[in-house]
Length: 213
Ligand SMILES: C[S@@+](CC[C@H](N)C(=O)[O-])C[C@H]1O[C@@H](n2cnc3c(N)ncnc32)[C@H](O)[C@@H]1O
Image (cartoon, rainbow, N blue to C red; front, side, top):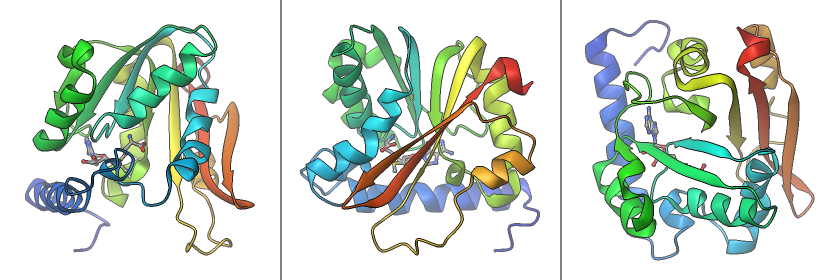
């Protein structure tokens, strides 16, 4: 399906197919990081996901868009507690089945998990931190998606953490999306990378609402 323009029916088909595909891949796994779509050992997960926690500098609310089974949120809580930060976790996911697993993983916060599509979700509140990837929407909607999150999901001084994840098989010459974010007019305040076996597998870009809009 061409992604240059998509009508609402085509968009629905795109999101339904993504949800069904990811549920089939994630849910059968036993290891919690694999149930969050990460293939590989736990040590690699830590190297590739801790850079997100490293971008959190103050206590507050944190929304993980695409929270899957909630394991990233569980890790973010642990990694930020080590620095005496108090993070209140929130999660949003397309998949009802994954949200059930996330609520079981973090029962204390079960009221903070939502089933919904970030492209059209009516957020009940604004957040200090929001994490997302641009691949959660079709290419033709990606710029608008980032604009939408910054203007509707973030508090006045809120921070958006845009992440890009790579597998070890990916071509190292493939451009990261930061150039595209800059071409779209977003100001990147900071970039943090995650390495494993000397290969850069994660980039996190810190975008602040104040400087961007
Ligand atoms: C790779 S997992 C991310 C897990 C974890 N948050 C992390 O960063 O490692 C991607 C998750 O995003 C969810 N997702 C994809 N598109 C979405 C959308 N438009 N709205 C909400 N959730 C979405 C998928 O269902 C899947 O559970």
